[in-house]
Image (cartoon, rainbow, N blue to C red):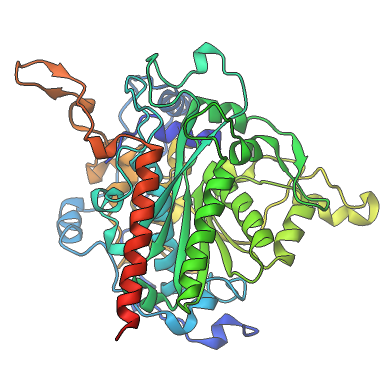
Length: 514
């Protein structure tokens, strides 16, 4: 969605009736305690707060009065203790309960209180979505602007995600079928890797160890949210258009990004839709041939969450019987009531993670939305009304003692890192932020200013050293050359994919020979 650009345009790399009765919830012994009772003092000048948020959107730098905290908590002692603890929780085996965790019972009894196994899985998929921002090259002075900074073989290694036990198998590229005015062009350079396409995400698959832990071979598709200006334009469209063969309709701009293609382009001779479905089908056929049980999990933040729903709809239509779940963060509404009904009928399970203060999940249809269903007897079914899909995990910025409360911080409220921080600390609506939350709170300020000032974490700290410039042998600061393997190339990616498949088949044949 368009508002996610406020965060990431300035970021460079780096079955039972009740789930609660099916298996007991593992609760933290500390869940009745707050980490700290810290209340952010509201600034008296709301205009300054609004100006600051808009400045992040427009890449402006303005001076605003410093915000101070009046609470006497000794944050120095707290941070010293916190930075000496691991950032991840132990990996529990969920193999016997993976279907419930994957949404077979619509997460009934698992959300409030939040089951710790489900919390870990939500964070895992959220980190995959975050990777699509962290590795995106948005530098308008880069000849590779709009691409991924790293080839798929080392993406997870560079971003520290190898611990999750997945391997990236395919990159996804998307484009928009619109003529862009010059002021919306993505790159300042005439000679770029692609004038039309953007790196939009990836397909990954669980390795053998993770597969045993989670009880099935899990194919993951991660979709990126809005970064490129052309995507802002698409996001602001509000037209509904038909999808499928029934009454389902979806937002025109989202669908356009998902299905656009052009024979004269290098990366989008096939659409994002065709690219992802070809790879998911290939992986599914390969692992099913080995006698394995396979699931598909699709994740994304903001616009990425909208694309995830479109992807799930197509996958369910194309591959009946495949367990499909969507885990989205800060996603907007995508389609009408018929779209929601068809997804439900096809068995797609959707978990929407939303932050109360975030405006993006309230759009499109800020006023005219699923709430009008209560008047069906009078109006009949309104096929032009936008409707959310699936179960909702609702989070609250005020629940975290680490975050600034109050004010008008659109980038911070919508930030995926804010979402992941709140998921990590959420126990239930009746309890406080969990004291043994593991995820590093400093990540929240990667692309915004949401942490209380006393934590002394700079805002928007996540950036390349020297903003990407390097000093050459002559003492001049220049743009570095990319490593050859990190330069986008559809031919190289296809060759790597074929090689990976050949290796998998050889390893499988070798294992079967014993």
